[in-house]
View 1 (cartoon, one colour):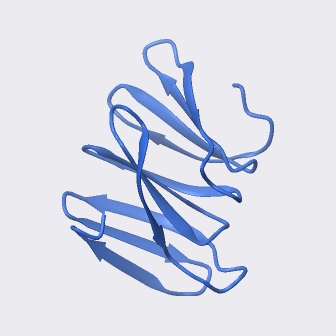
View 2 (cartoon, one colour):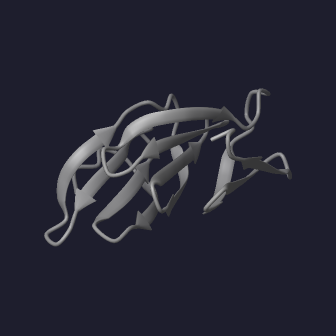
Length: 117
């Protein structure tokens, strides 16, 4: 891998593998050889959870935000604020066609529907 710090999570899609790490980056490896395709660097803290569904890759982490990237171009689509209090991290994500759920270390689950994302 090209990671420079701990890998916290992985998410598979049909044609790529995403790896979220301590350094706040999401590295995208394309199949079939899993070569580094691109690195997403928008987060300001570690990436603790990833989810992939249809046209979106979601990344959540230590900065209390969920970033949604469009696929297949991996462009930042929107940033959702999960928590504004310092220390509240996004620890879990799930995506359906028109629904996103995020859970964190503040013992809450927050839901978002389109057009929020």
